[in-house]
Each structure stands twice: as C-alpha cells, then as structure tokens.
Image 1 (cartoon, one colour):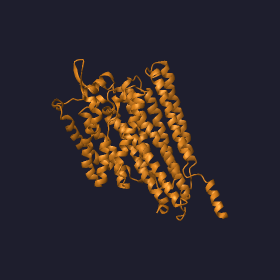
Image 2: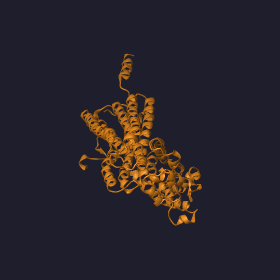
Image 3: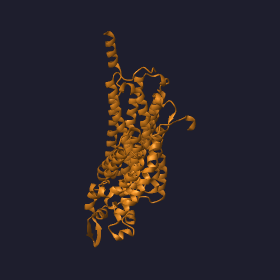
Image 4: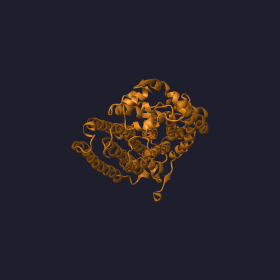
Length: 249
Length: 250
C-alpha cells in the first residue's frame, strides 16, 4: 500500500464517510451496551424493577442505584476520556430503558398479561443527566464519582416519586392496611411472591415511618460512589486497544 | 477528457463503499425472524408449552429445539468456514480504498452483532423472567429457554464470531495479533451459553423460582459485562479509520 494513496476521492467524501461511521458506531455501541447493561441490571436488581409492589421505600431505593451506576461509569470512562463526549451515562440509561419498555409491553403485558401500570421500569434519567453534567462541567473523574455518585443515589427516589406516589396511597383490604401497589401484587400472584413477603418493607427503621427512604437513598449514594470508581477503571480496561499473540492463548 | 471519462466509468463500476442493501437486508432478516419467533411463542407457549409431559409439548417445543440446534451447527460451520476459506492472504497489500470498503463491511457485521446481542441479552432474557414468574417449570427446556438459550444466544455467538473472523482475515488493522477486547466482546457473551449448564443444574437442584436476582444467575451477569469490550473495538476502529481519512479531513 502506498502512503500517498488516498482512501477517498474528495474531502466531501471523506466527511460523508466519517459521518456514516459516526452513526454506525453509535448504533452498535447503543445496542451492545443495551444488551450487556440490561442483562446485568435485570439479574442484579430486576425483581425491584419489574413490579410495583417490590418498589418499596427500602430495598428498591438501596439496590437499584447501586447496581445501575456500573455501565454509565464504564462508558463515561471511554466516551469522555477518549472523545470528550459528555453523554456516556445518558446513552446507557436510554438504552436500558428502551430495552425494558419494549419488554414490559411486548412480553410482560403481551405474553404474560401483567398490566403495564404494574410492571413499568424505574426511571434513571435524572441521575444520568446529573452524572453527565458533572463530568462535563468538572472534567474530573473524582468529582463525578463523589458528587455524581452521591447524586445518583439521592436522586433515584425523587426521580421516581411522581410515578410511584399514586401507588403508595394506603388502602384497606380484607381488614388489612396496605398500599395500592401491594394490592396489585396481591391480585397478580407470581412465583416471586413468597420472596416479596420475606423481603419487601422489612426492618426496624420501617417502624418509624418516614425516614426509611432518605436513609436508604443516602446509603445507596455512598455505595454508588465506590461502585463508580470501580467501574470507571473497568471501563478504562475495556476501552484498551491491546493485541495479544496467539501463543498466549 | 478521455482520462476523466475512464475515471468516471471506473467509479460507476466500482462497488459502493457501504453496501446499504446488505446492511438493511441483514437487519430485516433478524427483525422479521424474531417477530415470527415471538408470534410462535405467543401461540404455542400457552397452548402447548405448559406441561412438558404432554405430547403437544414434544411436537411444538422439543422438535423446535432439535431443529434449531441442527440449523445453528450447520449455519455456523458454513458461515465461519466460508469466511475463513475465502480469507485474503495478502491482506497487508490492499489499497486504502479497499481497506475502507472492508471497514464498512466489518461494521455491517458489527451492526448485525448489535441487533443479535439486543435480542439475546435484552429481549429474550427479560422475557424469560416474566414467563418463569408466571409458569412454574417442570423441565429445563421450557418454551422461553428453548428460544433464549438455544436460539437467541447461539445466533449472537455465530454473528460475533463471524464479525471477528472477518476483521482478522480481511483488515490490516487486525494483523498485529489477536485484539484482546474483541475476544472479550465475543468470547465473554459466548460464555453465557456454557453458563446455562450451571443455571439448569441449579434450577433442577433447588427451587429457584422466587428471585430473579438470585446468585445462581450471577454467571450471566459476569459474562454480560464482557459486552463492554465493544469500547475497545470502537477505539481500534477509530484509530485505523483516522489513519485512512486524516489527511483528507484536515
């Protein structure tokens, strides 16, 4: 190959080729990251994400942010540090939500007939915007981990509150006090129902009522900071361009 | 003038850099095929997929399993064999334009891999969650498993390996060795399939229906992380495309 030869015929063609690759790269990254992020999220926090009765004030608030900050941190580590693209977290979360919404409509409702207002996914968009915004404005991984990670945990519950609040209204049913979400679960018994009874809204803090959600969100933010650091370095490793020789296999 | 006419003729005869027809046909193939699969699940999941001891289960589900396994082995052998057999033995001496064309073809393969990973890891895996929260299984080969584990996963494995083979046999950028993150992005999700062995063993041994986030499923999570190897692939590609286009874009 001659170094003087050109791959394109004109500057216009070079620009067109470059733009076409941009779109193809975005498409491929979006769907492959969607697949990986979704299988990770559904198998580490899925039960809390699937059903409204699991979306309680304690474990949902604790678990969902901790397990969901992973892929955004890793993709930011590549998108920002290599290309100065400040949308790694939002792209991940949009992918995850697309995968989840398609599933909840076509499969949870379309195949097994759970109503969509019982199995809609959690909203992660506010935390993702803040995570990307802090990285864009601060340009620092440490700042993003500490401030962004904490915000990721703290914003989760308020970000979902307008959606979940109507289902946390108390109702009395057969002499029992429960939430509307609990009543939904009571009417749609699943194989996970026994575990729900064992895990959802248990613990001594619950006795004191209103403090459960903020305490859980604060704890979640703390762990999210640590997970962000860890996954940032995972992201850097995954973004490496090393080659190995066949002898090493 | 004659020289210009020759050049114009040559351009017209030349294959396009990006064969959009192939790309959209490939994408349509996956989408239409999986739409048909979803229709089949909807009809025969409820009517023939609830009791594995029923004769209709054998007819509609076990036969589906046998057919898909044979088809996958045949497709994988033919496709991988073809890509390897037709490899370019003088890959380092191709022209920059041919290299660019091959990068586009490589990205068509990656687009197919993206679609296949979406269906395997997202669509059919979460679908399995809702099926097993609804139907208590009496076999490892449930309708959702027959589609998820033994159809959607092999399809993304076949596509991913084909993509890697294409890059390795036709692109100069991949001649300096084996691209680590490409191997991670293809072999990691591949390992989800052998991990099905652990999954089915665990489901057979314990009653594991109650929690989708049960530790038994963490093998899928770990190997799912490997999809992030796509970041490394993108970086290798961007570096080699920059080399090809840099002076024209400057």
